[in-house]
Structure formats: C-alpha cells, structure tokens
Length: 340
Ligand code: NDP
Ligand code: GDR
Image (cartoon, protein in one colour):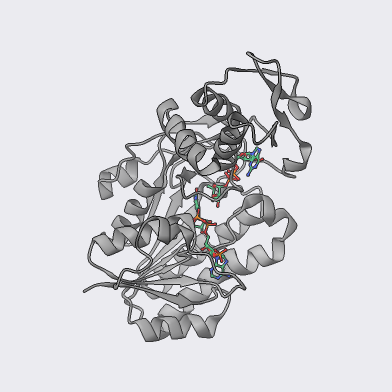
C-alpha cells in the first residue's frame, strides 16, 4: 500500500487530492494546523473524514523539526505540499508571514526529505502568480517570471528551491505551475466563490449589493478536481519536472460576474468606470454590484492564460471542464442552496 502526505488537507486542493489518493488505494496522512477551532468541512463534504485509510496529523509547515518527525513517523514515499498562505490579497498585509509559510515552508520539507529519505517524491504547489506582469502569452513552463505580490514572490522562492534540490541532491521534486482552479469547495474569500455566493444571496433577497474590486483582470479558470489528478500524475512520471496546468482560455472578472447573474436569471448592465463601476439589474433598476476600492490590490496581475501542452503530451493530462456559462450556472445553483 502506497503512503502519501498531503499538507493543507483542510484546504480546497488538499481535500480533493486526499479523496483521489484514497480512491487509488493509498494510505493518506493529511496535515492540519493547530487552531482553536479546526474546520474539516471540506473532507466531511466529500465523505472521507472517517475513512480508515485517512489519518489527520497536526503539523505546521514553518517548523523544521516537525517536518522531520512527520516524514519519520509516517514512512510516506510521496509528499504533496499544498499548505500555504494562499490568498494574494492578504499577502500584501502579511508579507512576512506569507514569506515564512509560503516561501520557506517548502524548504523545511525539502530539508526533511534530504535528512530522512532522499527517495521521497515531492510535489510543490507552484502558481501562475509567479508569471505576474505579462511577459508573454500564453504562459508556458519557460515564460519569464515577474511576480506582482508578496505571495507570488514567496511562491517563486519555493519553486526555485524545489528545482535546486532536484538538481543538487537528485531529489524527485516536481513543481506544478497551476493556474486558478475553482470548485464548490473554494474558499469564499476568492473571487469566483465570492461572486457566486453573493449572486445567490442577491437573488434570495439576503444581500442588496455585491461589492468587488478590480473587474478587469483576466484569469484562466479550471476545475480543481481535475488539477489534483495532474499533481498525482507528476509524481508518477519517470523523471521529476515542472509542468503548467491550465485551460488555455481566459475571462475577465467582469465576464464572470455577468455569467453568474445570468445564471440567477438576472440580466445586468455595467456602467461607470474603474472604481466607480456598477452593475444594475435591468428588470428592477437596482444596483446589484458595485466596485469598492477596498478590494483593489496594490499591484495587479492583469492577464493569465496558460498552455498545458507539456502536461498533455508527457502526462496525458487534459482539462475537460473549462469555465463555461453552464459551469458557472451549476455553481450558482449549487451555492444558491447553501445560501438558502
Ligand atoms: P487553501 O487556501 O484552500 O488551502 C491552504 C491550506 O494550507 C489550508 O489547509 C491551510 O490550513 C494550510 N496552511 C496554511 N498555513 C499553514 C501552515 N503554516 N502550516 C500548515 N498548513 C498551513 O488553498 P488551495 O487548496 O486553493 O491551494 C492549495 C495550494 O495550491 C496552495 O499552496 C496554493 O497557494 C496553491 N495554488 C492554488 C491555486 C488555486 O487556484 N486554488 C492555483 C495555484 C496554486 P488552514 O485551513 O488552517 O488555514
Ligand atoms: P488570485 O485569485 O488572486 O488569482 O489567486 P482571487 O480569486 O483572489 O482573485 C482573482 C482576481 O479577481 C480580482 N478581484 C477580486 N478578488 C477577490 N478575492 N475579491 C474581490 O472582491 C475581488 N474583486 C476583484 C483580483 O484582484 C484578481 O485579479 C488565486 C489563489 O488561489 C492563489 O493561491 C493561486 O496561486 C492563484 O489563484 C493562481
């Protein structure tokens, strides 16, 4: 029986990856942080919280000695490092914490691997945020990086240290440069979930007006469940490598807002510009969305679109659920029930 560690099991990807590994017959150690009220709603939602092959382990990525103990006590042969301070907006307010967790955290695990068992395979959750300011489109593995947030900078360190340990110590370290991927398990602070949740509440009369930040950025949005399959495939390959996972399509935040309202049978018309932009319900004349500069970031990533050709040819990985009107509609309907 294969044994894997998934750090960050309380997050979106951690929950889906744990589910996938359990289906594949792994024994899974899922790590969570000690807090006053640990929340496992995602693994409960997926029905795996009480799976006999899943063990939950308290662990903090910033602690080298617990990283070493984690590897020693579990005997895992694959480590998927998904834990991070993952919210770009917060990284501007907490840059040092973000650097410690998101940047140095993975180094603790790589050091632990070097000390305990250099044969352990390691997956690092890298991100399209490393591309940042547009250098080329679509972005691929060797597009130059230019991060635009403390989060992106921290992830870039983690990416290069993974590559460095691969080249220096022959550690099987893979870096998956994943573009945005969403799902019903996505945290409500991220824009897709914030929008669908807000739209559902507007339709149910529980919220007058949804407030957002910059509507111009374009994102390449995929479906999280498919992306965790890509992570697993990277660690099953013959050689460790770096791969982009993306859909090769891109949409603005504004497009997403329009699609979400449409899915709730509300036609909206946008007017005003930048920080004054609003969306009005054409049937009632009510303002149902307004831009609030509070949600703007000090520096923005304007355009992300990734080409996953390398992952398709080498790992046989393909995204089959890009962002479509019907996918947004499904989400609004599903989250509509939650809001209700
Ligand atoms: P989430 O924010 O949903 O999950 C992050 C997880 O990291 C949570 O379980 C969180 O625990 C845990 N964590 C945070 N700090 C620590 C710490 N100090 N020690 C141990 N665990 C910690 O992120 P996603 O699931 O969306 O993303 C997974 C990974 O992939 C992240 O590294 C993210 O940066 C990266 N990524 C995500 C993309 C996406 O579109 N979703 C795209 C590209 C990369 P807690 O619940 O206690 O906060
Ligand atoms: P992102 O995702 O920053 O791409 O990082 P997020 O959903 O937070 O933002 C996407 C875009 O929407 C704009 N935006 C808003 N964002 C939020 N959260 N809230 C708002 O009100 C709002 N209004 C407009 C943002 O400015 C941005 O341009 C996600 C995370 O999962 C990272 O961990 C991951 O690495 C990247 O995706 C790929």
